[in-house]
Image (cartoon, rainbow, N blue to C red):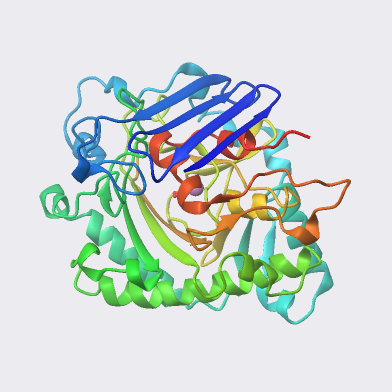
Length: 410
Ligand code: OGA
Ligand code: NI
């Protein structure tokens, strides 16, 4: 049995994984953003429902498609999507805050970086250390392919709800068409539907779990997946070298050629009360690197910078890159995973494609030896990504509280 018990200040995390019948994740974080006690129990599962993730085949409540809600003539806005006042977005003021206006999301030209431009390299290094977040241009992914991928998913989400239900997902693997993240009964939900699928490892890639419509979607997404894996590998080399390591180091720590790659396509329907809800609650991505293709027509992504939420204005055919928790862990917190969220609006629906480049899921991830010294002891205990992603898969998006809760005693 794999058992860890780490205590620092008021943070405590206990996980009992894999071989036990009853999987329990206890999670307390009194220092974090949310200042709340969190506890999830996943038990009472039939044998059939159990698997190595400890998540069952059923969601705790009947699933309601947000698209269906948005298309029905709601007379009152459903309680399940109303965030508590402190978490609601300040839609009318956010873009007018002078601090927000003064901060630019770094834009990184990969072509100049790879041809040896030191300034660009330095700018990217700084973005990773402070922000964990930047846009990339000249990234070598064809703009036509980006448009085709986005269009294919827009068509998919515009199919009638019944046509999508055949791909309905479960918390067991999350693959397919879904409408919630986390399995906590009674949770306040986010205003989005999504589709989740795997590219790598090849063992997990299954075209039958991908949509068959529109007719070109599988072909387009095969090419898109290949190109984004390549981009992921290139970004990994820069991240590694900017840490003063050899270029392959980070990739090796991810499992070499055995990395994971998956994707979450987000569909944010129009929301009649955007001031009460969120498209996606604050979170950091649990994995390695996220390469986001945002909607070309509608903004919505916001990044946290101290106490301000900055709305990202994507450049045409740029990708938005953000670092996930596994990079923060491997770099011993030299690089930061970014906290972000999505706001919605009443005028236009929004579609985004989030591609996740992740470590091999069953190897322990911990701060790289080269980055650990007596003055900089390892901040995080080893944990596999399979184990780590149980946090968000069971409890849903909760700021950066998961990675913060892991910090080891000094
Ligand atoms: C995500 C995410 C942002 C967006 O899927 O993890 O943060 O703009 N998406 O949809
Ligand atoms: Ni995200």
